[in-house]
Length: 366
Ligand code: NAD
Image 1 (cartoon, rainbow, N blue to C red):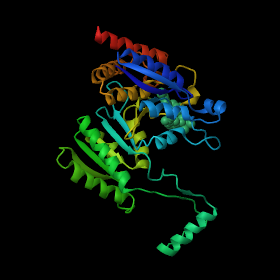
Image 2 (cartoon, protein in one colour):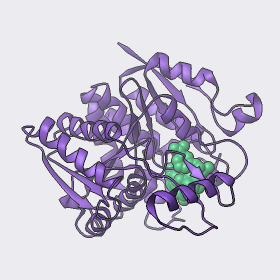
Image 3 (cartoon, rainbow, N blue to C red):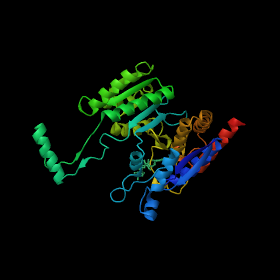
Image 4 (spheres, protein in one colour):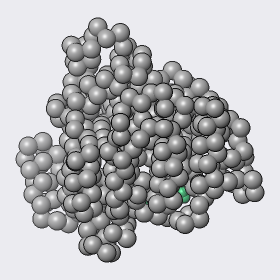
């Protein structure tokens, strides 16, 4: 059986990461029917649209995509393709496993957590009132009339919107993930003590879903205030398992999690919806390293590992993960970021690290 998957090759270091990851995934023995699609800065210059319809059509037809990073220019230019993809395909859950492999430089070698971040709501809903705008003035007056609170004239405002619908489905997704992957505890993070009607709703609805729908699942459910959670994560991350969070906290805690396991080069992710799934590393396009065959392919490759699990190719996934773990543990055929010093001359390139992983997989199979 061959799996049709869209491969969005990205920009910056995206294309070289894509080449490396494609050859490793092809070497697992699982057959992929890749549909390579370009998107991003170069495509914007050539086609006038950084995310042409052909890319979305390809993912919609196949249901699955592996995506290399894409640059979002600061200031002018286009809006984030990453955000656009998540919205267009209704990828409401962002899964980010943070697992410390033996051999990485970390103070927290027992970390093995999965962050489940809500992808659409919260301060990311895109409802903003610009400082000085007429609409912002109307909003100020509305707030003064309804709340009796006089806000300063020189404010800018971003709305934090959290719904019952959005909370129900992200908490369900966290439980479904925990059930599918044998996880035993879910921690819901919030700041309900301060934001009673947004985070408070997230906590209330999440607790209800946990009790009513998963009360007999055998999965423990607990809640933590976000600042306390951050404190505990950088002291005792091994006490956490699956963590479900609203969008902004999820974004921040994902990077914190990447730090716990040895850096951004090692952090994979998946954006999941009811109909589609797009797998991508947490890191960006690292444009300063473009074309240097230098950056770590593991963020994208471990995202490919998540894809293998998603399509239930468990045996291939385990073999790939074993080879990756072994390469990290040996610490020889690894990129600069996994060496004791960043200018270590024994660091290998992106492509060579991929080759070493393939060799390791072959050695296990032989
Ligand atoms: P970045 O993640 O691209 O790079 C920051 C630094 O992290 C790099 O300079 C490098 O030191 C390190 N790093 C990143 N990936 C690495 C890897 N694979 N191996 C080793 N080291 C690695 O973050 P940035 O510079 O803030 O963003 C660059 C561009 O990427 C921006 O336009 C941003 O919007 C975009 N971005 C895209 C995505 C995505 O496509 N999903 C995610 C985040 C950022």
